[in-house]
Image (cartoon, rainbow, N blue to C red):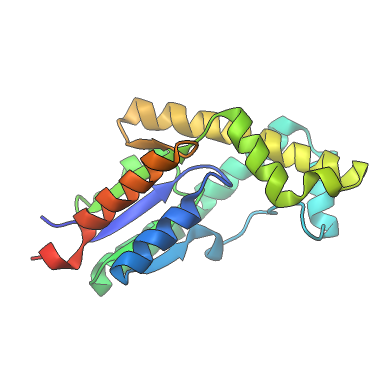
Length: 197
């Protein structure tokens, strides 16, 4: 059975969107993000909306992470329905997003849908988030909000890796450009139309 789609999971800023876009462009595949199905408070940059500032400044790290997990659990039925609809539509599709938690992905009953996760070490992930957010140029208040986002993302990365390894799901080190490129080529070939039945 040829794969009909690909799911890319991992924490924020680990490179899911870039990998999905590259594969989608190579294949002319439909690409979507779980962020479009229902967004969590999101990043505290470039502009900080008052609810986002309150979220990151007033809650404990434990509560921030708890809310993220609850958001993913609540969003999963919609994500599952979206994957089912994409399979039914025919053609090749790629879905990426943090809401594709390993434990949810492993429970899918779609043997024709591939899944791969991206992860990175803490130093790489922190540097990537700080670079994208312009952390060094931000004021002290903004830096504190970004630091909370970093802490949340690092914890999520650790939990995604632990769950993916426990469940036997494939992981790619986002800090290794050659590994990401090779995985992209391999996944595109597996999904590629030239060999489709």
